[in-house]
Amino acid sequence: MRIDLSFTPHQADEAVLRDKTVVAIDVLRASTTIITALSNGAREVIPVPTVESAVKLSAQLAGDVVLLGGERGGRRIQGFSLGNSPAEYTPERVKGKSIVFSSTNGSQVLANGRYARSLVVCGFVNMALVVRFLRERPGDFILACAGTNGAFSLEDSVCAGMIVHSLLKDGSLEVTLSDGALAAESLYRSHGRNVLKLLQSTQHGKYLQEIGFEGDLKLCASVDSIPVLPQLDGNVIRLKREAERKDITPAVAPS
Ligand code: MLT
Image (cartoon, rainbow, N blue to C red; front, side, top):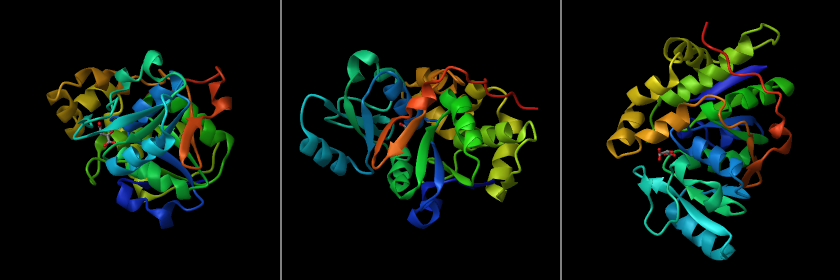
């Protein structure tokens, strides 16, 4: 098994992702929001890269089962029903709905994901399920981090490193790591002990606190709190049904 890693969406373009198994990571907050929405009964999430394409698509799909969700600058986009706070995606708001979703960084990775052979959405909240998914289908894969505004983000890299660490820990898999995957595993060991503290200290985490979303950091830091596995199917993200098995092993602590 070879594990590659891209730190930003620019490093994960069509050529890199084509026919690969991809794990898309945007801890703050797109991954966590999508995982929450689907766990709370949303029928599907349709990621699109731009606000314009979101508005156009929702008009085409029209009907009261379609909601527009997403952010720019961390805040809800004007005219959209939902922002990018996982707390907004309650069962009352999202059950049975199709959500057309656009965020600054996360939906860029997800939009590129249409070239992949398969893509799952990962945050700290569904860590153990993602690790199990990768263990059960040994083969090469790429960890695609969303980053922040085109640059490296520590929280996505530590989350990616937690996956690598979990796969390595019992020594049962033969794993080859790219330098990026190796670096992420090392970052996980140095910064992954207290995920909430980590999120409170990163650039985007600090920004979210400044604009009033400190509560979201707690939701996003809650390891294994939402055991579902969203998977891209065409250009739509739905829950992978077999992911709802209850026999998950909690994610590991750094050693
Ligand atoms: C993104 O996709 O850029 C992020 O989820 C931004 C945010 O925290 O709203």
